[in-house]
Length: 562
Image (tube, rainbow, N blue to C red; front, side, top):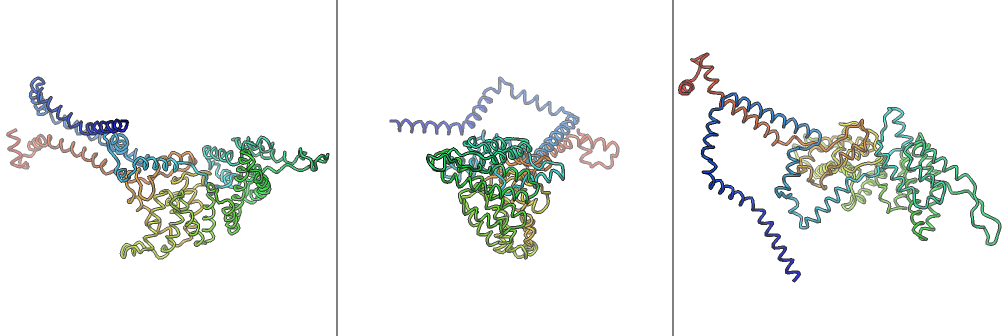
């Protein structure tokens, strides 16, 4: 019975939906029928005669005013559309029609009909868009004291925004603190230090945490049972205090490396102790997780210090060892640091091996992955590539693969080519990036521009092919080709991540939609045609009085009859 009732309700619902689909035609015929029935009481014929008489009595001045008004309105609409398109990269009329009018009229996207499970597809695409608008930690972020502060000393401008630094403070509290920090005085101080906004207050707190560790203390456990001899030893060093000083107080990379080496000694000892106790309770598991994050962070920054100081092979070894020791910590994206170091060594075979592992369909993409793959494909053909020769004979298989790889990379992040081709100036990369956004493009180009320049002809190939991507991607931007649609939230987030003196790059703007220009021109043309049509007899009459011989006979006859 329940199934029968459910089936009846479904049929009734489908009938109602079907009736509403065609209800507008019924209303149309009803209105026509009512107009026909009420034509005598409403005096429709008399009203039409009045309207036609009114139109016949209009003077040319009215049409001049009508022409000027319509041309003015068309011009204002065109100017507004041009301004809106320059600012937001899309047409206001088209956006309103797609976003608001089409749902009201029952419009459905063509792509949705191709999916068998439309509801699942929509939810997955929405989930992907939200995840791509997530802000990520920059794998190649610089050192605040040794690099960001140096920029401030030279230029007087702050390279990091408050929003970016606030995200870093949240990351530090997540990775470097746990609930048991109150049991150790130094960790309790550092827990407060990561929340400080003032850099000097954070540095002072780190020094205070290290000073506490210099005090000897008694351990509350005797060396031998029933003994009065107590073990005397130093408290373990505070690794996170050394991290903060290396990041913010050290003015050179060499100083930062020394502090990170001290942090490594302290962090490795804490990690080994917590590893032995990790299965004794949730509190110990949280502490072990925190100590693991601290150790991985220290080793990674040491590898980055070695890379900055020119010891690239040593940095590569440290990164490989770190990835083998902690293979599950993919949130740090250490493979992107490894790719950059291997490109510096020109070890392209090793780069390809890393890409084969991480450029997988199930893993999240990044500009480093996509553009490094494009660079390797371009390297095989760029030294002999010529656009003139390619246009004559066509693209070879290798050239086609390189072009497709460039199109794939550009569709993922369309802002990178302007920086690689030096069409737009670079700034220091932020500490956080938005994938597919301008912030990620800056972070990638800042470190990889030299690698593209090193490959002969690679930038030339990129210059000749990258703009062709946007002719392949469907319009509007809600659609995509190789990737899911480009997120519309990137511009807003990039404006928060990047400093105010930088002009944020937006999605490459297509040409102003043709129908807008056509509509504006058609309005102006129609108005001018109406003006000439109604003014032509009067103008010819005035001209005939001035020069009767120059007016055609047909026009003279028409003027006399008029």
